[in-house]
Image (cartoon, rainbow, N blue to C red):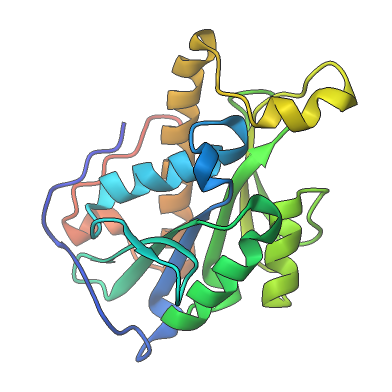
Length: 218
């Protein structure tokens, strides 16, 4: 499990001077159903906040329509904005576009983390832009940003036996027997997010004295 020291991640107020060094990680979902399958992306973003010791979550409805946490990674100049939209999944894009505009984050630096009923529980697939693959939250973001380049971290949550059960299924909590797998996949997804920030920024986060230790095999 990744571990981060409690310092070297400072809060920041203005990122407009260097937008290309700002990354935004969004947990798509329904904030009122935080621990359900549909909101597994928000659980990942909460773990990212723990890892980087970002600022306390703040509800910002006027500018971001969601809950925001932010920080600066070491002395690299990299800035990170974390978002949990407060609006329903189908209109998450409004929250994402407002937050991206407020913090001046380019679309390619916005990482979307979301559930995928077509993947087995514990499976993570990174999709490089393109279509929404039927995911309403992703479609909303694409429409609001007028872009499709955002990397997506798709977390498998399994599919119910019949199509008529999908709506109820995705709003259900994980079963006790699934929780160990969920914890592991959340940590694995965090590792992949960190790797992706490193890849796009050219900065080794472990060299920034933030104490990040990535899980084996990722």
